[in-house]
Length: 83
Image (cartoon, rainbow, N blue to C red):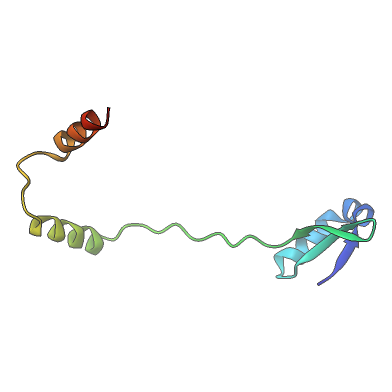
């Protein structure tokens, strides 16, 4: 893991970011002590709901017993009971 003093990091930030993007963890030091690390972010790709998943959720909902009230009415009752 490469380590650089803060003064070098200021001058060569672009190069250090390139190192981090290539998979290295870059440590920045102040007075010889580590104070920060640069590393690449791993951003999870956005997942889209598939039609199959939506169909599966709808099928499960149909198996649940009818409570005699809409979800909105149930939530209103729960809210009113809590206050």
